[in-house]
Amino acid sequence: MEANIVVLPGDGIGPEVVEGAVAVLTAVSHQFHHTFTTHTHLMGGCAIDTVGNSLPDETLAACLQADAVLLGAVGGYKWDNPDAADRPERGLLALRKGLGLFANLRPLKLYPELMAASPLKAEKLAGVDMLVIRELTGGIYFGERARWTDDAGEEWGKDTMIYSAGEVRRVAEIAFRAAQGRRKRVASIDKANVLDSSRLWRKTVNEVAANYPDVTLEHVLVDAATMHLLSRPSSFDVLVAGNMFGDIITDEASMLSGSMGNLPSASLGAAQNGHGCPRGLYEPIHGSAPDIAGMGIANPIGTIMSAAMLLRHSLGLEDEALAVETAVARTIAAGHRTVDLARDGEPSLSTRAMAEMVVKYMEPIIGDR
Ligand code: IPM
Ligand code: MN
Image (tube, rainbow, N blue to C red; front, top):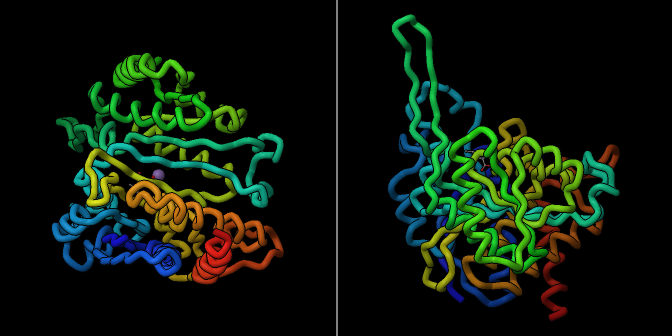
Protein backbone atom coordinates (compact mmCIF):
# COMPACT_ATOMS: atom_id res chain seq x y z
CA MET A 1 0.00 0.00 0.00
CA GLU A 2 1.02 3.59 -0.59
CA ALA A 3 -0.10 6.10 2.00
CA ASN A 4 0.43 9.82 2.41
CA ILE A 5 0.70 10.82 6.06
CA VAL A 6 0.98 14.42 7.23
CA VAL A 7 3.02 14.81 10.42
CA LEU A 8 2.46 17.78 12.74
CA PRO A 9 5.03 17.56 15.55
CA GLY A 10 3.81 20.82 17.16
CA ASP A 11 5.30 22.14 20.40
CA GLY A 12 6.88 21.00 23.67
CA ILE A 13 7.33 17.25 23.79
CA GLY A 14 5.31 16.93 20.56
CA PRO A 15 8.37 16.57 18.25
CA GLU A 16 9.97 13.99 20.57
CA VAL A 17 6.96 11.67 20.86
CA VAL A 18 6.17 12.04 17.15
CA GLU A 19 9.73 11.00 16.28
CA GLY A 20 9.16 7.78 18.22
CA ALA A 21 5.85 7.07 16.48
CA VAL A 22 7.31 7.80 13.03
CA ALA A 23 10.12 5.32 13.78
CA VAL A 24 7.46 2.70 14.52
CA LEU A 25 5.52 3.54 11.32
CA THR A 26 8.76 3.28 9.33
CA ALA A 27 9.41 -0.15 10.81
CA VAL A 28 5.85 -1.20 9.91
CA SER A 29 6.33 -0.02 6.33
CA HIS A 30 9.55 -2.05 5.97
CA GLN A 31 8.27 -5.18 7.63
CA PHE A 32 4.91 -5.24 5.85
CA HIS A 33 6.22 -3.83 2.54
CA HIS A 34 4.21 -0.61 2.43
CA THR A 35 5.28 2.82 1.26
CA PHE A 36 4.37 5.52 3.76
CA THR A 37 5.29 9.00 2.60
CA THR A 38 5.41 11.53 5.43
CA HIS A 39 5.32 15.30 5.07
CA THR A 40 5.98 17.46 8.11
CA HIS A 41 4.11 20.76 8.54
CA LEU A 42 3.84 23.57 11.07
CA MET A 43 0.92 23.85 13.50
CA GLY A 44 0.55 25.43 16.94
CA GLY A 45 3.02 27.73 18.70
CA CYS A 46 5.88 26.89 16.30
CA ALA A 47 3.65 28.00 13.42
CA ILE A 48 2.81 31.28 15.18
CA ASP A 49 6.55 31.93 15.61
CA THR A 50 7.49 30.98 12.05
CA VAL A 51 4.60 32.23 9.89
CA GLY A 52 2.39 34.16 12.32
CA ASN A 53 -0.55 31.73 12.19
CA SER A 54 -1.27 28.74 14.45
CA LEU A 55 -2.85 26.89 11.51
CA PRO A 56 -1.19 28.03 8.25
CA ASP A 57 -3.33 27.61 5.12
CA GLU A 58 -0.78 25.29 3.55
CA THR A 59 -0.88 23.01 6.62
CA LEU A 60 -4.68 22.69 6.45
CA ALA A 61 -4.48 22.13 2.68
CA ALA A 62 -1.87 19.37 3.14
CA CYS A 63 -4.03 17.69 5.81
CA LEU A 64 -7.06 17.81 3.49
CA GLN A 65 -4.98 16.00 0.83
CA ALA A 66 -3.54 13.39 3.21
CA ASP A 67 -4.76 9.89 4.00
CA ALA A 68 -4.19 10.61 7.70
CA VAL A 69 -2.57 13.14 10.03
CA LEU A 70 -0.32 12.34 13.00
CA LEU A 71 -0.02 15.10 15.59
CA GLY A 72 2.17 15.51 18.69
CA ALA A 73 0.92 18.33 20.92
CA VAL A 74 0.56 22.09 20.87
CA GLY A 75 1.03 24.90 23.39
CA GLY A 76 3.57 26.12 25.92
CA TYR A 77 4.40 28.88 28.40
CA LYS A 78 5.69 31.11 25.63
CA TRP A 79 2.26 31.43 24.04
CA ASP A 80 0.22 31.63 27.24
CA ASN A 81 -0.53 35.36 26.99
CA PRO A 82 -4.32 35.50 27.52
CA ASP A 83 -4.60 38.62 25.35
CA ALA A 84 -2.74 37.23 22.33
CA ALA A 85 -4.67 37.35 19.04
CA ASP A 86 -3.66 33.80 18.15
CA ARG A 87 -2.89 30.82 20.36
CA PRO A 88 -1.54 27.32 19.63
CA GLU A 89 -4.80 25.76 20.84
CA ARG A 90 -6.78 27.82 18.34
CA GLY A 91 -4.82 26.10 15.56
CA LEU A 92 -5.72 22.68 16.90
CA LEU A 93 -9.42 23.52 17.18
CA ALA A 94 -9.40 25.04 13.68
CA LEU A 95 -7.73 21.89 12.34
CA ARG A 96 -10.34 19.60 13.96
CA LYS A 97 -13.11 21.82 12.62
CA GLY A 98 -11.50 22.26 9.20
CA LEU A 99 -11.20 18.49 8.75
CA GLY A 100 -14.76 17.93 10.05
CA LEU A 101 -13.55 15.53 12.76
CA PHE A 102 -16.60 15.39 14.98
CA ALA A 103 -15.84 12.13 16.81
CA ASN A 104 -12.80 11.72 19.03
CA LEU A 105 -12.18 8.10 20.07
CA ARG A 106 -10.16 7.68 23.25
CA PRO A 107 -9.73 4.02 24.17
CA LEU A 108 -8.48 3.06 27.62
CA LYS A 109 -6.95 -0.36 28.12
CA LEU A 110 -4.78 -1.19 31.08
CA TYR A 111 -1.46 -2.96 30.99
CA PRO A 112 -1.43 -5.50 33.85
CA GLU A 113 2.22 -4.72 34.63
CA LEU A 114 1.38 -1.04 35.19
CA MET A 115 -1.39 -1.54 37.75
CA ALA A 116 0.99 -0.45 40.49
CA ALA A 117 1.52 2.87 38.70
CA SER A 118 -2.20 3.64 38.95
CA PRO A 119 -3.56 5.59 41.91
CA LEU A 120 -6.43 3.08 42.20
CA LYS A 121 -6.16 -0.27 43.93
CA ALA A 122 -5.62 -3.29 41.67
CA GLU A 123 -8.98 -4.84 42.65
CA LYS A 124 -10.81 -1.77 41.32
CA LEU A 125 -8.89 -1.94 38.04
CA ALA A 126 -9.64 -5.53 37.09
CA GLY A 127 -11.59 -5.63 33.84
CA VAL A 128 -11.22 -1.94 32.99
CA ASP A 129 -11.57 -1.54 29.22
CA MET A 130 -13.44 1.51 27.97
CA LEU A 131 -13.76 3.68 24.92
CA VAL A 132 -14.67 7.32 25.41
CA ILE A 133 -16.19 9.00 22.37
CA ARG A 134 -15.89 12.74 22.73
CA GLU A 135 -17.82 15.10 20.45
CA LEU A 136 -15.08 17.28 18.96
CA THR A 137 -16.36 20.07 16.72
CA GLY A 138 -19.26 21.52 18.70
CA GLY A 139 -20.40 22.42 22.18
CA ILE A 140 -18.86 25.11 24.34
CA TYR A 141 -15.54 24.92 22.45
CA PHE A 142 -17.20 26.39 19.37
CA GLY A 143 -20.19 28.35 20.73
CA GLU A 144 -20.49 32.12 20.73
CA ARG A 145 -17.96 33.79 23.01
CA ALA A 146 -17.10 37.31 24.10
CA ARG A 147 -15.13 39.45 26.53
CA TRP A 148 -16.32 42.94 27.44
CA THR A 149 -16.37 45.61 30.14
CA ASP A 150 -19.69 47.07 31.23
CA ASP A 151 -20.50 50.71 32.06
CA ALA A 152 -19.65 50.15 35.72
CA GLY A 153 -16.18 48.96 34.70
CA GLU A 154 -16.89 45.29 35.52
CA GLU A 155 -15.22 42.82 33.17
CA TRP A 156 -17.21 39.95 31.66
CA GLY A 157 -16.42 36.79 29.75
CA LYS A 158 -18.87 34.42 28.09
CA ASP A 159 -18.85 31.06 26.33
CA THR A 160 -21.91 29.24 25.05
CA MET A 161 -22.62 25.54 25.21
CA ILE A 162 -24.67 24.81 22.13
CA TYR A 163 -25.59 21.60 20.30
CA SER A 164 -27.91 20.78 17.44
CA ALA A 165 -29.76 17.47 17.47
CA GLY A 166 -27.87 16.50 14.31
CA GLU A 167 -24.51 17.04 15.97
CA VAL A 168 -25.55 14.82 18.88
CA ARG A 169 -27.09 12.17 16.64
CA ARG A 170 -24.03 11.58 14.46
CA VAL A 171 -21.67 11.13 17.41
CA ALA A 172 -24.22 8.97 19.27
CA GLU A 173 -24.49 6.72 16.20
CA ILE A 174 -20.74 6.16 16.34
CA ALA A 175 -20.96 5.29 20.03
CA PHE A 176 -23.75 2.74 19.57
CA ARG A 177 -22.04 1.12 16.58
CA ALA A 178 -18.79 0.88 18.55
CA ALA A 179 -20.66 -0.68 21.48
CA GLN A 180 -22.13 -3.36 19.20
CA GLY A 181 -18.57 -4.55 18.54
CA ARG A 182 -17.73 -4.53 22.26
CA ARG A 183 -19.67 -5.24 25.49
CA LYS A 184 -22.84 -3.57 24.18
CA ARG A 185 -23.11 -0.84 26.80
CA VAL A 186 -23.22 2.93 26.27
CA ALA A 187 -23.00 5.49 29.06
CA SER A 188 -24.05 8.94 27.87
CA ILE A 189 -22.59 11.76 29.94
CA ASP A 190 -24.45 15.04 30.36
CA LYS A 191 -25.69 17.62 32.87
CA ALA A 192 -29.37 17.32 31.99
CA ASN A 193 -30.50 18.32 35.49
CA VAL A 194 -29.23 21.85 34.77
CA LEU A 195 -28.41 22.49 31.10
CA ASP A 196 -30.82 22.76 28.18
CA SER A 197 -28.14 21.65 25.73
CA SER A 198 -27.81 18.50 27.85
CA ARG A 199 -31.58 17.90 27.83
CA LEU A 200 -31.46 17.97 24.02
CA TRP A 201 -28.37 15.70 24.17
CA ARG A 202 -30.21 13.15 26.33
CA LYS A 203 -33.40 13.21 24.23
CA THR A 204 -31.41 12.71 21.02
CA VAL A 205 -29.30 9.89 22.47
CA ASN A 206 -32.54 8.16 23.54
CA GLU A 207 -33.86 8.44 19.99
CA VAL A 208 -30.68 6.92 18.54
CA ALA A 209 -30.75 4.17 21.20
CA ALA A 210 -34.14 3.02 19.92
CA ASN A 211 -32.38 1.76 16.77
CA TYR A 212 -29.93 -0.31 18.82
CA PRO A 213 -32.09 -2.57 21.01
CA ASP A 214 -29.11 -4.88 21.61
CA VAL A 215 -27.17 -2.09 23.35
CA THR A 216 -27.89 -1.09 26.97
CA LEU A 217 -27.91 2.67 27.54
CA GLU A 218 -27.40 4.51 30.83
CA HIS A 219 -27.42 8.27 31.31
CA VAL A 220 -24.88 9.54 33.83
CA LEU A 221 -24.63 13.13 35.03
CA VAL A 222 -21.10 14.36 34.47
CA ASP A 223 -20.39 15.06 38.14
CA ALA A 224 -21.52 11.55 39.07
CA ALA A 225 -19.53 10.16 36.14
CA THR A 226 -16.28 11.52 37.57
CA MET A 227 -17.09 9.60 40.75
CA HIS A 228 -18.16 6.39 39.02
CA LEU A 229 -14.97 6.40 36.95
CA LEU A 230 -13.15 5.89 40.24
CA SER A 231 -15.69 3.73 42.10
CA ARG A 232 -16.77 1.35 39.30
CA PRO A 233 -14.47 1.92 36.30
CA SER A 234 -14.83 -1.63 34.97
CA SER A 235 -18.61 -1.19 34.55
CA PHE A 236 -18.06 1.22 31.66
CA ASP A 237 -17.81 0.06 28.06
CA VAL A 238 -18.45 2.95 25.64
CA LEU A 239 -18.94 6.45 27.02
CA VAL A 240 -20.20 9.28 24.85
CA ALA A 241 -19.88 12.90 25.92
CA GLY A 242 -19.94 16.46 24.63
CA ASN A 243 -16.71 18.27 23.85
CA MET A 244 -15.85 19.74 27.26
CA PHE A 245 -17.20 16.91 29.41
CA GLY A 246 -15.31 14.44 27.21
CA ASP A 247 -12.10 16.45 27.57
CA ILE A 248 -12.37 16.42 31.36
CA ILE A 249 -13.36 12.80 31.94
CA THR A 250 -10.66 11.43 29.63
CA ASP A 251 -7.87 13.10 31.60
CA GLU A 252 -9.37 11.55 34.72
CA ALA A 253 -9.84 8.12 33.11
CA SER A 254 -6.31 8.14 31.70
CA MET A 255 -4.85 8.05 35.20
CA LEU A 256 -6.42 4.62 35.74
CA SER A 257 -3.71 3.40 33.34
CA GLY A 258 -0.97 4.92 35.49
CA SER A 259 -0.06 7.78 33.17
CA MET A 260 -1.90 9.98 30.72
CA GLY A 261 1.18 9.49 28.52
CA ASN A 262 -0.20 6.08 27.53
CA LEU A 263 -3.46 7.21 25.93
CA PRO A 264 -3.96 7.56 22.18
CA SER A 265 -6.82 9.11 20.28
CA ALA A 266 -8.34 9.08 16.82
CA SER A 267 -10.50 11.89 15.49
CA LEU A 268 -12.78 10.90 12.66
CA GLY A 269 -15.43 12.55 10.53
CA ALA A 270 -17.47 11.81 7.44
CA ALA A 271 -14.74 12.50 4.84
CA GLN A 272 -13.00 9.52 3.30
CA ASN A 273 -9.46 9.22 1.97
CA GLY A 274 -8.23 7.43 -1.16
CA HIS A 275 -8.32 4.10 0.67
CA GLY A 276 -12.07 4.29 1.29
CA CYS A 277 -11.41 4.86 5.01
CA PRO A 278 -12.10 7.95 7.11
CA ARG A 279 -9.37 10.57 6.91
CA GLY A 280 -8.39 10.95 10.55
CA LEU A 281 -6.27 12.96 12.93
CA TYR A 282 -4.29 10.88 15.42
CA GLU A 283 -2.83 12.38 18.57
CA PRO A 284 -2.03 11.36 22.13
CA ILE A 285 -4.45 12.82 24.67
CA HIS A 286 -1.64 14.41 26.69
CA GLY A 287 -0.50 17.98 26.13
CA SER A 288 2.85 19.54 25.25
CA ALA A 289 4.31 19.14 28.78
CA PRO A 290 6.56 22.22 28.51
CA ASP A 291 8.18 21.36 31.87
CA ILE A 292 9.97 18.35 30.33
CA ALA A 293 10.18 19.49 26.68
CA GLY A 294 13.55 18.86 25.05
CA MET A 295 14.73 16.49 27.77
CA GLY A 296 14.07 13.34 25.75
CA ILE A 297 12.20 11.67 28.60
CA ALA A 298 8.56 11.92 27.46
CA ASN A 299 6.52 8.74 27.17
CA PRO A 300 5.95 7.99 23.45
CA ILE A 301 3.36 5.21 24.05
CA GLY A 302 0.30 7.45 23.57
CA THR A 303 1.61 8.63 20.20
CA ILE A 304 2.76 5.16 19.12
CA MET A 305 -0.68 3.77 20.02
CA SER A 306 -2.21 6.68 18.05
CA ALA A 307 -0.14 5.54 15.06
CA ALA A 308 -1.63 2.06 15.54
CA MET A 309 -5.12 3.61 15.44
CA LEU A 310 -4.07 5.44 12.25
CA LEU A 311 -3.11 2.12 10.63
CA ARG A 312 -6.43 0.58 11.66
CA HIS A 313 -8.93 3.37 11.00
CA SER A 314 -7.46 5.40 8.12
CA LEU A 315 -5.51 2.71 6.25
CA GLY A 316 -7.54 -0.40 7.06
CA LEU A 317 -4.34 -2.20 8.15
CA GLU A 318 -5.63 -4.27 11.07
CA ASP A 319 -2.71 -6.76 11.22
CA GLU A 320 -0.22 -3.90 11.26
CA ALA A 321 -2.17 -2.09 13.99
CA LEU A 322 -2.24 -5.25 16.10
CA ALA A 323 1.49 -5.78 15.57
CA VAL A 324 2.19 -2.32 16.99
CA GLU A 325 -0.20 -2.78 19.92
CA THR A 326 1.24 -6.20 20.74
CA ALA A 327 4.79 -4.84 20.57
CA VAL A 328 3.85 -2.03 23.00
CA ALA A 329 2.27 -4.54 25.39
CA ARG A 330 5.38 -6.76 25.22
CA THR A 331 7.69 -3.79 25.76
CA ILE A 332 5.82 -2.92 28.94
CA ALA A 333 5.54 -6.55 30.03
CA ALA A 334 9.32 -6.85 29.68
CA GLY A 335 9.69 -4.07 32.25
CA HIS A 336 10.73 -1.16 30.03
CA ARG A 337 9.52 2.16 31.42
CA THR A 338 9.74 5.84 30.68
CA VAL A 339 10.19 7.99 33.76
CA ASP A 340 6.45 8.68 34.21
CA LEU A 341 5.84 4.91 34.53
CA ALA A 342 8.91 3.90 36.53
CA ARG A 343 8.44 3.36 40.23
CA ASP A 344 10.95 4.56 42.81
CA GLY A 345 14.35 3.11 42.04
CA GLU A 346 13.32 1.55 38.72
CA PRO A 347 15.53 2.53 35.79
CA SER A 348 13.88 4.49 33.00
CA LEU A 349 14.39 4.75 29.25
CA SER A 350 14.54 7.85 27.09
CA THR A 351 11.75 8.59 24.62
CA ARG A 352 13.90 7.36 21.76
CA ALA A 353 15.05 4.18 23.53
CA MET A 354 11.46 3.31 24.45
CA ALA A 355 10.34 3.70 20.82
CA GLU A 356 13.32 1.63 19.64
CA MET A 357 12.30 -1.07 22.11
CA VAL A 358 8.81 -1.18 20.56
CA VAL A 359 10.38 -1.52 17.10
CA LYS A 360 12.58 -4.33 18.40
CA TYR A 361 9.58 -6.20 19.87
CA MET A 362 7.67 -5.85 16.61
CA GLU A 363 10.13 -7.89 14.52
CA PRO A 364 9.47 -11.29 16.14
CA ILE A 365 5.70 -10.65 16.05
CA ILE A 366 5.89 -10.29 12.30
CA GLY A 367 8.17 -13.31 12.15
CA ASP A 368 5.43 -15.25 14.01
CA ARG A 369 2.83 -14.58 11.33
C1 IPM B 1 -7.09 17.67 24.29
C2 IPM B 1 -6.49 18.97 24.72
C3 IPM B 1 -7.04 20.09 23.83
C4 IPM B 1 -8.55 20.15 24.05
C5 IPM B 1 -6.41 21.48 24.04
C6 IPM B 1 -4.91 21.43 23.87
C7 IPM B 1 -7.03 22.50 23.15
O1 IPM B 1 -6.73 19.22 26.07
O2 IPM B 1 -6.94 17.29 23.12
O3 IPM B 1 -7.70 17.00 25.13
O4 IPM B 1 -9.03 20.77 25.01
O5 IPM B 1 -9.27 19.57 23.24
MN1 MN C 1 -7.62 17.53 27.14
